[in-house]
Length: 442
Image 1 (cartoon, rainbow, N blue to C red):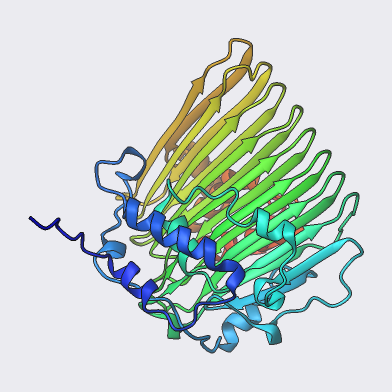
Image 2: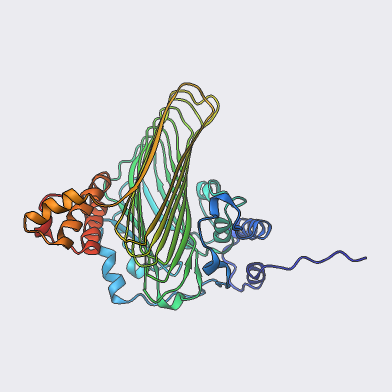
């Protein structure tokens, strides 16, 4: 009796049929990625971490790799300057766009290089770091990324280097990537005593119904300050499902700013590991949804050693018939005494048919800790609205002002000034509020 042959997934068939396999030094990771995905498959509806995320738009069809670089329209190119003065590395449909990038006069101790420039001689540090943090056996979309990515960005900051100018890595998706998949990849390593600011941004054409699966791995060495901002601002038809992996060593300060604004379906799985005593990971985020958008933030903060600090503060603003999920876990491992962790999620529901899910959680296996969590889902204060209306402010203006005040606490925590100013402008545009209306609210 012959054994039954297991059918191959369309992604394995695509992998085996590739003609452009990339540099040899990536072969092992590509192979590990497709084998992990083939063993894992897409999440089922009964999996707790995925049950509120409707993946049918992703699983109902095959999204082959975007096999060429599309043409970025003028409107997207103009947006590259939104963040102010910065080093700039741009990828279009997953491939380096050298003509849109600007890495001139890099500061001493800073390396910013696309993978494609290494040919067959990548630095050993990159080879060791690439894939070291992302758990491809656990996360199917990280596995797909590992199987199919064709390029990526490597940022390395030498020991003790102080980099004042932000590094902006922008992933652009064009209309030519419609019904195709793009796999952005980022690795950031800041050595002991370094200081650096990295911004990762996703923008795209509104006609691009692409599947974007990014993986970002960032590590802060001892006594290091690493600021990481992630701006998910995809086109309205795009689906963005990604992972970010953060690691802080002894006395490191790793600070994250997260913005979810755009895309048909967006999900981020944020895994933060505190691995050195005195380490701190402080993440603040805001997500804005309208129409029928769906946005999902899942976070896992792991306190693995004693005397560490973590902060999570996420706020959502929901309009139309949109839906959001915040599911956050703080896990204190055995022996991780003197842990100090705060987790907050606040949601402002402006659409009568909008829906916000909030589920902050704690798992504590140590007995000398200080951990708090809380969540709220509510509407604007009617008394505050009435007060503003009595001062001659329109209903729309009053709503916008109060909403901006709600968001302002988070926006003010964003450390990179270019990101902070950009997010303020996005909020004002989304809410239809002019500068003259709000004075100094933001």
